[in-house]
Image (cartoon, rainbow, N blue to C red; front, side, top):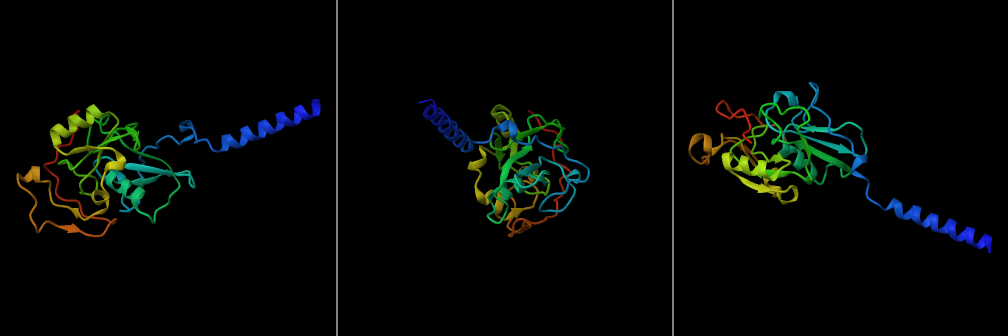
Length: 210
């Protein structure tokens, strides 16, 4: 009788152990966001992140310890959508522009998990490579305040259209800066991803209004 009871207990423990293997990894096991170093290079543009303004992104893969850096949030989301890129994404962080006081260089610690962020798309602010940006916020109220000032629409990560991050890029200054819609002869490129020349953004606002 005692032998049979011991066998039942052992089997129960083994089943419990197997069930635990199917449980999702705790968020506490995810790597914390890194800070942009002076040597950090954009995955697609191959340029220093420190030389670009606007929000940036980083992706941690299960297969590597260091993050993959992106000079814009648009590039970050493109990596998640492109089928040829790595699929073992552990976590994606983007700059929380609700915590950033300066558009040029978001402060250390201003990061948010892209899965929980609110994004403003189609605003009049351009990203690090001069392309239309998906501007992230951890708080919906901060995103709405930004949208009221700079235009655009609110979206969650999965709701951002593929065409917005993978389609042709209009590198002309935002229409709100010129007081008119971009013309048909506005410079653009049809392939993505790839480096692009930054437009003249001398009139861009250099701070984020919350």
